[in-house]
Length: 514
Image (cartoon, rainbow, N blue to C red):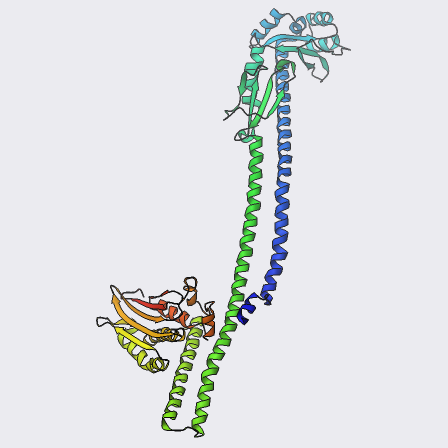
């Protein structure tokens, strides 16, 4: 009952309070921050999406302006190549012939003319000779360009001193503007770093005129209708090459969610690790406290008996020789008990410090078992146990530490005695199985639950059973047995069930790695 109350009571260990403070100070704010982050990601993603759309629209605006600039530059170059006189005349056959002579192609323009305040005066001045540009400048004094006819584009014609002499009015032919000019612009003048953008130009009816790169689908999210006279009605479409804007934003959103989730996972794992370590330390602290209490009891009881019977013998208060021999046997038994307990503690201390050494030598295992039984048989019989021993005859010698192996066997026998309160029967068997030697100790005691069969070999561990806690012990015996067997290249195994006894088996290979 007291043990149950102790387990259900609130932890008072400072480390328990420390982990509670740590969890409250780190975990709760982190959870709150994660929740806020998860709620903030969609808003930020929407902002990024709008920014991407605006950037794409701006790019399309620049593309249209660049196209207009290229078209005007080409028209100005053509005007200068033809000359002011034929431009002033403005007749179609004359212009087409002049374009052919200049090597520009007669189908380049539908219209190309120079607009001035007095075309006749300017033409007459040019025919009289002299500096064409100077005469043209004089003829066009006071000229203010007005709007052109519907469907015509315009570009100022400047003289050498940057004075505007007139306006070149032009309209490209559809075949040239929609075919050659668009293609030359995107292949020569269009700046597309890392080929990030895909631009598609279509007719108003949807026919594709040009596309600077192939795409996996027709999902162009940004569109712009051109308004310049030479390209009026054409549609510019834009998308990112590898994925759409929506896909790009979604990818960013998923990445942020994954990053937040990963941070939370790492934080949770860290907290879980801290919690597990602190819990383990608290558990070890409790086990060590139990160990000290158990060892104190283990030392106190035999010392009290030894002292009691020694004083009785010393004072001569023994009635009869038989009674004296009984007292001597008790003193001898309790001294053996103390010796075993102290040896376990000393060996465990050496193991913890890394100073435990084993002296391996060819040894007859049957002889080791017999020596242990000779030293411990009296104690076994005094406890009322029936001992059954079976040692095979075909056992080879093995290189083992005789004292360490004897101590392992003694610990198993001692456990069999302590945890067999009702059926007092022990069977010890030593035999050879193929390429190994097996030593087993079987009792009919309280047994070990399946969940505890691995834990009982840990230091200080004692099964959570009322029958176990009624029997005092240090919790070191089986931990020492496991260490001894591992040092010899062997193993220790257990087969048990509650209420049906236990069989502990020491397995030593005939050939083991050094």
